[in-house]
Amino acid sequence: MTIDFIPWPSTPRFHKGLTITEKINGTNGCIRILDGELTTQSRKRLITPGDDNFGFAKWAYDNAGALTDVLGYGVHFGEWFVEG
Image 1 (cartoon, rainbow, N blue to C red):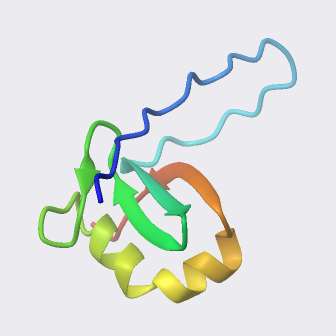
Image 2 (cartoon, helix red, strand yellow; image 1 turned 120 degrees about the horizontal axis):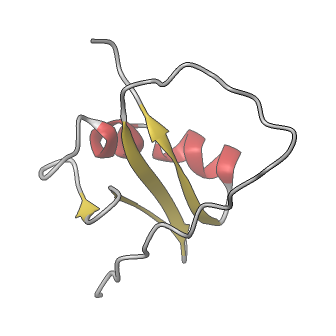
């Protein structure tokens, strides 16, 4: 089975009602739960525990059951940060 990369969607720009927060150093990550399978990607490429991005893929695969239960079907983009 071939897994296709899904690009990060365009981020909307808001002009009113903004909340400013401190920038957290991290990396973009995506958890994809499609067709009953969890896969991961960074902002620019597919990643696996053997070809990882700051431990994100390993963490996601180690927690695949809970993530599937909580997030459900779909493509879930976000920011990943770890201690240090």
